[in-house]
Image (cartoon, rainbow over all chains, first blue to last red; front, side):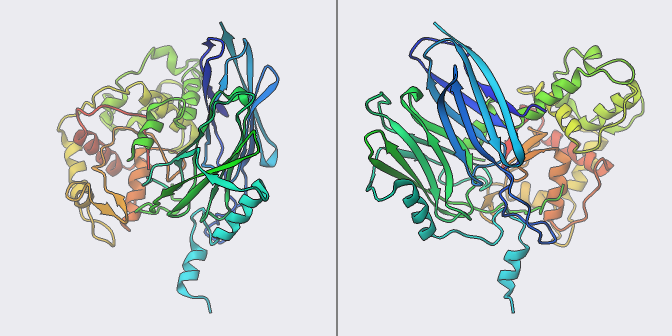
Length: 106
Length: 146
Length: 215
């Protein structure tokens, strides 16, 4: 199953504010839940999300257990030049997912 | 002798478990982020539905009134809760390339409470905003039955 | 459900059910034992979800969408049936159901609908409640702070915030029965399919919303 979905325009005018919506598939297990036997279910969450635009970091978010499962992160960035945006999610148990999307800036 | 209420809390399979942060813990978490600076109310808008469908997944948008230029922009936004098991919700690092100081996500809220957001501006000032939310439990708890 | 939950549903960029829909699309094109994929016979399945549960012409059995998919797999594709609530079956069902989004639910009175109606009106469980008592007589009122919906099954399979995952209508019905402290029927039981048939009749003419988001 795809681990992440990125939605953003493929083309924009220079200086336009790009609206980017990202979805990651992840249970975001808080570490506060217990099984029926009373055993704590270990914390397992995404910790960071970073967006780079042609290599330069333009957005970073730190996530805590209070972020819901299958997290949505919607943010903006200015369309400066054509190129590639990379989206990186990292978290517990070595979780690491990368997605990228191209943008043509006219 | 454990009381019936604490027994029920222990047996609960909600994500809450039996832990609750206190307003004091939230203040401490905020202090970590802002140090000894003064926080002024204003500029920060927290949009959360006032009565939410399910505390598991609450849409939240935090935005800050700022031109987002190199000279004047939002450097960071932090969100806190007073009654979740721990006070931190998210921290966002921004810069003039953001275009707008705004982020939308979905959060978990354990109880009816006030959610707080603090923004750090490029001039070193801190601003805050709050939103009050009413959280109800799902009527028919299914306890993980599939 | 609130405005914001509906907004989450209506935008494919924010609806977590899309993970299952995309996986379903992949499975739809996957070649199985017979050398064929679903897509080799079906260029589109638009309208299918809006017509199910439906009686299988060959066997005469009443099948919901999940059972229809499994029947196709076992009878025509030389492939094993997917388990109820398995990732694969949910994904395929979500992908197929989404193709009926916006279409009106097609249903008419028949013995299955009548059987489902009787179950819907039957008092069950330790609380001695029937579905009708909440969802026909008291919809709009509150149960422990939550509004009681009419319970129209227009959006299944759906992402339920309470589950933090995608699930079928049968999963939801079993949860309700548990909530009523009644004995639940097993997945695939004829009673559950009859209930589904009745619920779809009850929602006849309403537009499909699958895959929906619900509290």
